[in-house]
Image (cartoon, rainbow, N blue to C red):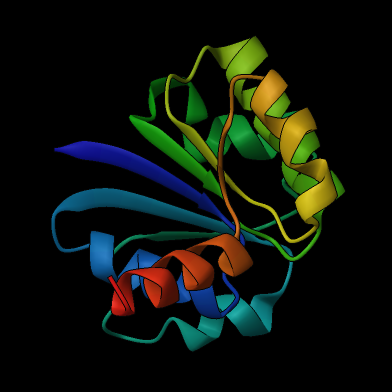
Amino acid sequence: MKHIVIIGSGKTGRELALELSGDANVVVVDKSLKNLDILGDDFNGKKIWADALDINTLEKAGVKDADAVYVITGNDNLNLVVGKVTKRKYGTKKVILQVNDTMKKKIFKEEGLTIVNRTYLIVEVLRKCIA
């Protein structure tokens, strides 16, 4: 079974955690207890109420052995730092980051990180609607 770590349990993180927890061991890290509580009873993974900038938190979440780490907080700079640490220190092959600022796209890609940007996704879907 795959081991997935999700940093950030806002709307996107919550939906991703619920979707993936049926087929994988999912650990969600968030510094907001309220966000973790909203995951509800349908979530059968592990919740960690802590700051992802803490190396001990990342290790407790199991990033060392993770098949993938999703860093999807609302803070691009936090996402970049946690993504870089996960990639460089632990060698996680799949590190996927949410990026809100399209100007930062190049920086994230240069680090070998996979980025997801809502604006680009929506534009791509809308473009395909007329194809």
